[in-house]
Image (cartoon, rainbow, N blue to C red; front, top):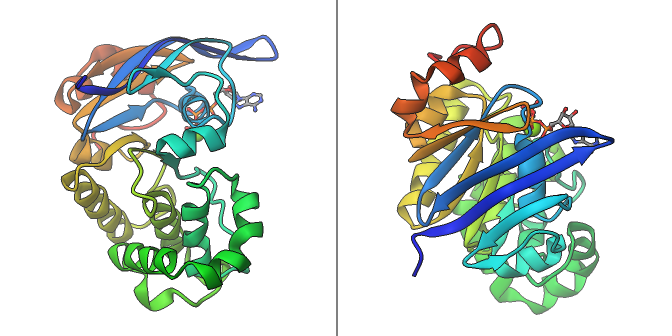
Length: 258
Ligand SMILES: Nc1ncnc2c1ncn2[C@@H]1O[C@H](COP(=O)(O)OP(=O)(O)OP(=O)(O)O)[C@@H](O)[C@H]1O
Ligand SMILES: [Mg+2]
């Protein structure tokens, strides 16, 4: 078995003639956390969108376990075991926390989030097994006592964990996390860091997009740096932290020593 679950090469994406990704290549090893960092507009979310089938790259290859995913639709990727969270939360505010997490199981069956929502009433009665699985994920992510609350009523930090529980409930092979601690306080951030470490210990492979450098340095095995749609560096957290190209890209925009 290849050590690399994900091998991306020569990925290009333009929006109206402006390059968002230019010839991006990197690999993500099985069972590890690969962080993707870079200043605002670097192309991180665009890359996650290509990996999760939300957008189609213009060129390049995305090998997942040796299969080229480039251009496959979201539901096909979900079926292969790829899940994600969104930079801007995508929860159904009126649905309970439990039902939001259940959507993570029905998308696995090949639906989009909205299709998953439409199938929920039937599933809720039929599939005790799915419910137990969702309750287990709620427990792992510290939400067991909030299962019946509408997701919209939760504080922001809890909502971020509902997104994570939904992404992990299906036992995915690869999980893409787009800024899981954005907007969280230090205590909530530490809690998410603990959950990412816990998922890693249980063998999960993750690609983590984050601006919080303390989190990135604390949980990642390897860091890939994008700037202006190009990969400018890659290496261990220690290597990347002192790389002059990386420091220059961030200069005046944020501190890498945070
Ligand atoms: N759907 C879209 N249509 C047009 N331009 C887009 C679209 N999505 C992204 N872009 C552009 O592509 C570039 C990369 O954006 P992207 O959202 O991937 O950056 P990012 O690294 O995730 O930034 P941030 O850290 O702010 O989330 C930006 O210039 C952005 O304006
Ligand atoms: Mg982004």
